[in-house]
Image 1 (cartoon, rainbow, N blue to C red):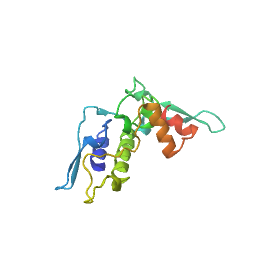
Image 2: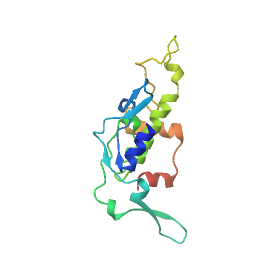
Image 3: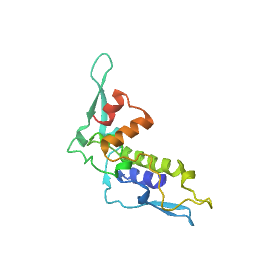
Image 4: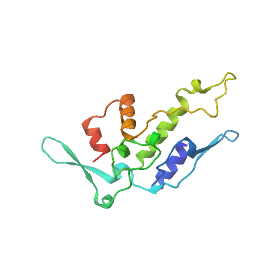
Length: 163
């Protein structure tokens, strides 16, 4: 999964809808492939789109969008809710491929977390049950669950997520 994502990102493509349903697995061949590129879009890496510029003698930093990416940005209401990165929830139109890393992290965490709860008496993973790391009814609820699990970001981290 990570190799496929790395390949997409090396080509400058952001998947923008990673979730378990978009990972095809062949247990016999021990392979996993990313699918459903319908939401994919060429995007810069975050650090290529945003530059930090000092604005004061005290060393305070201001986030500035570099001119080559300061067109119209990208739609921020994208990605399946349970896998939506915080910067998308906050309405950032200038996100990068990091939104895929967030989603992939959620997928991997779900793969390992509570997997024992999904096993049946024969110690096989139940095929119809699913564990969601961040099960939320809407964006505010999702953000609340993320903050509850990972902690509230600092003011500087919030500025990075939503410049």
